[in-house]
Image (cartoon, rainbow over all chains, first blue to last red):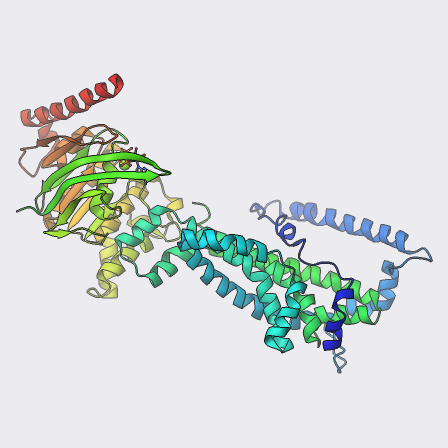
Length: 297
Length: 263
Ligand SMILES: Nc1ncnc2c1ncn2[C@@H]1O[C@H](COP(=O)(O)OP(=O)(O)OP(=O)(O)O)[C@@H](O)[C@H]1O
Ligand SMILES: [Mg+2]
């Protein structure tokens, strides 16, 4: 495990933090659909991506079919890693398991890291948002720390915790906590004076104010933060699992790279992308459900 | 005996080194159970004065005393019907009232008593049919009515109303005026109401406070309304005292308005 850590600087993996902000934008909520034209609408939404995917596969196939190609073509991927694609949940023992199972392990790790980030981020954000001076003082620092890529936290984390499991969780946590803090703080700052007045007239105590006013009023902001955060935490999974080794999807990629199984990496990338997309949609859906009514105001 | 004393109150807001004087040397003594209207042109500082009494903003100088004690913060014994209703959009109509009721009566009333009390107050403003709706799903006038129900349900010593009937049609307005006055009489609560409606002011109040135009608005004139209660709006329509009061208020506003144009 530590051996893999040694190889860090030579890693040819894509730098994971840059696309973070970009990823979260295109997924704005779609307008609600009437049931009548559902079939046509679904077709209209499903057919174009399928066509594009087909085109990409064809171009990819053409580009990578030449004898000197450095990357495997789709057909090559299919022959090399067909089993990985077709059967996500096989378990041959000795850590030789399907990518679905690996994803579940990674998700567990992300759930812990991101769960802590969500709770801590909302709590810190709520406190900071209440004070204009804390906001002014801390915001620039958060804005800087927010841009530090997950890989960069890795050595520090390992040095601090001296153990791979908590370090991995910490990397996920520290990557995803900033947008939660920042957005919560902004949300709390933006609570309308009207709501504060109501709370004051009723003499709500701080706990009641937090639960009854602050959280619901800032919920749209909080969920924006959580959505960006969950995306970042999933981006950190490869970095985190370089440490832990074992069965996660992130470590699978690292391992496949070390043993030059490029086809496996491509399949794993698709898995990670799809799961990341679903995580994003999940948080968006929860957010839409929780903030119904509030956001419309 | 003076119940609520407002004494030489000044209020100014400072922003970016700039000071805007809003209220200047406002003094008035209010008796318990009295109904007071505040009337004045838009932006003169009526809401600001109400907020000071509610304790939501602090006086710049001078003092406000309730039963001899300095007002230095808001509390449920001074309920406010806000000008913009200020309902919490994530709570239903019922839950909005419930938040106030469970805070004020959480220890003294049982759960079913509280429920009945909430429904009773929603009935008063004819909003019980929409108790499960959210504020975004009801009209402006309906929101205002819920705001009134929320304030009434707190059984405050002092009821502060900021243009409570502004967004209502004449019929609903008359009904609600009656309902509020009924409760005021029963509870003997003190009521301070901001209004733009001269008839409403004369019909409901014991005294009408007329404010001069801002900046640095003062109390221009205080008018006694010596009409017997209960007052019937139909009988009063031709009443001499009523018409005289009405004229006095109109004159004040009209002259002040001219004053603004001259300035
Ligand atoms: N928080 C604040 N900061 C700065 N200025 C304020 C603030 N609140 C009110 N003012 C100013 O005080 C003045 C009086 O405002 P206020 O809301 O009390 O008027 P109003 O008499 O209630 O008007 P309306 O009848 O339109 O409701 C306005 O000029 C307003 O700009
Ligand atoms: Mg006002």
